[in-house]
Every structure is written in structure tokens, then in C-alpha cells.
Length: 169
Image (cartoon, rainbow, N blue to C red; front, top):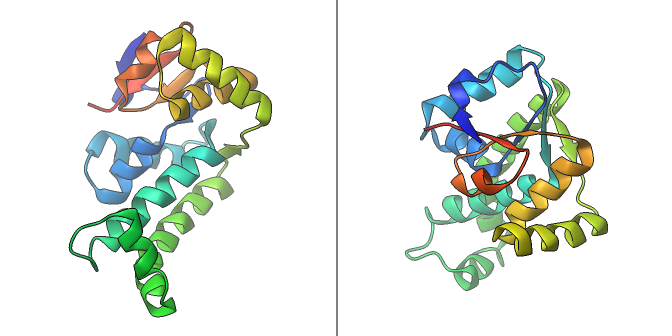
């Protein structure tokens, strides 16, 4: 089932996917930005995972690196990172955004670790629903924690039984 994220009241706990944070970080979706403001101010039961945090960091690094290299490839980013002054330039905005996530954690955002058992369950979700592995891992973590709601712009979650997907459209 899918619903509009702007209509999420926050009475039940919700899992936040990486794209919601990235919309906020890049200022690309007002609904995602407003939703995270609600997480900041309403004492909402919100969760994400260590895997989501890794996804955010990786995408922020790639975006930041694009300011210093002509065409972003992993090899070029690795080469850029060989010099500490370049790492500092690239990582500075990344660390600033991670500071924001840490503020959300201080306000109650839960960050759930990914376990080996979650990976086994995720592979079952890949087989059952045709999800990509990271998305399947999010569902595995949500099931383990009893979460029934996800904030994400990824419509692939709509196929998952017993999960309500809240889209920022």
C-alpha cells in the first residue's frame, strides 16, 4: 500500500530510506524536507539503518567529489582521496550532513544495525518480491523491529505485503 508522506501523522513508527535524507541534503524535495522537520520537532518514532547511513555517505561523497573531478568514477574518486587535502575538501560537506543525522539521533532517531540474519532474510525478499538487495535488507530490518511503515521515494516497496510505503511525490 502507498500513501503520501505529507499525510503521515507519526502515530506509528516509520523507517526512513536514504532517498528521503538525500532529498533533504540536496534540497530537491520539499515534502522530504518537511517530513524530516517533523522528525526533529514532533518526537516521532523514526528509524533508519546503518546500511541507509552508508548509502547516504557514499552518495554524498560522490556528489561532493563531482566538484573536483570532471567525470566521477570510483577510480577517480579513489585517486582524488590519495591526497589528504582532497579528502578534506570532499569530506567536509559529508561530515556536516552526518552532523545533522547525529542531531536527529540525539532527538530520538533510531539507527538499527544490519545483522547476518537480516542478510539471509533479505535474500528471501529478493526472491519473493524482486527487490534489489539494499531494499530487501531494509525490509528485513523493518520486519525484525516490527516496523510497518517506510518513508521512501522508491516505489519498489509497494509490492511488499504488510508494509505501507509513504511517498514524498
